Length: 117
Image (spheres, rainbow, N blue to C red):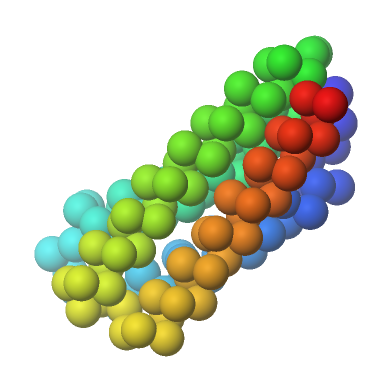
């Protein structure tokens, strides 16, 4: 069991979530309970899964939560593409957030490899 706040990947995922909450504030009103809600929920699920995993008693359980966080990151990648294609994000905002998701996924897989070795 460890403190999730000490993990660099949790910090990066939390920063991404905060950034997407701000960025999605400009979505159209009709997306309040649609894409805006979904992108926020999916983004926040990433650091949530990491935090959940830190409370596990075994490395194997922790890794399962890290894989779940990675799965949420994959979903978030699609939601960013959708947001760009619907013109809710301009190309620069898309590039910034997409790069952050890719970095979180890279960090998650690195942590998984580290735990498994």
